[in-house]
Structures are given as structure tokens and as C-alpha cells.
Amino acid sequence: MSETQAGLFEPQPGLGTARSDRKLEGLAAKAEKTGSKFISIAQAVIRALAIDKETLTSDDVRALLGNPSGLDPRTLGCAFRAERIAGRIRSTGEWRVSTFASRNGGVVRVWKGAGK
Image 1 (tube, helix red, strand yellow):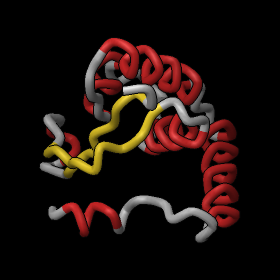
Image 2: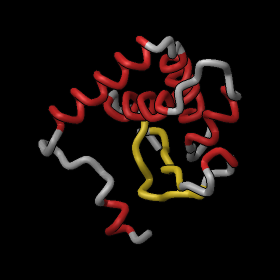
Image 3: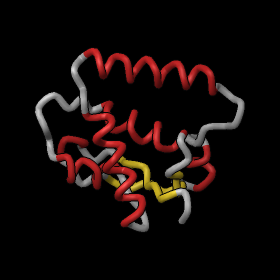
């Protein structure tokens, strides 16, 4: 994926932010409703990895969390988005093929700590 294509996935300032925030709130509410208690745990793992590692992906977080019962696949997306909005992480513009078989060769975004 070229850098231009990767830019398509970056949020544009002032464009769709309210809708995106509503979507995030809706996903978080649904995750809480279905019993997903892992969003705050995933956020803590993301913060720790952002400090300890040069870059991180959802594979890194998933490896530390394992596959606990009740983990909704959308939980990690909610956690990464919340950390990005809080300014603690930012996208590198890179993507990697996931190492998890359950992702069926899907790509995951590469992140770095905001201060790096």
C-alpha cells in the first residue's frame, strides 16, 4: 500500500469527527453492554507498549491479552482509537500482515508512541 493510499485511512481534521465520535461511543456502549471489560485493559497494554517499544500493532496487544473468554474482536479497535484520540499514540502510516491465524492474513496498522 502506498503512502498515498495509507493517507486515505487517516482521519481528516474536521471531517466526520462528530460522526466518528458517535460511532466510537456506540461501539464502546455496545461492548460494555455485551460484557466486554477488556477495553480499559487493552488501553493500559497499548500505553505500556507505546512506552517500551518503538512500534506496536494490535498483534502485540493480542499476544499479551491472550484470547480471554468474552473478548469482542472490536475491543482492540475501540482501545486503539481511544488512545489515538487521547494523543498517546499515532499511526506510522505503515501496515503489516497479521501473525494471527484468526485474522486470515489481514493487515494491521502500525502505531508508535506520540512522543517518538
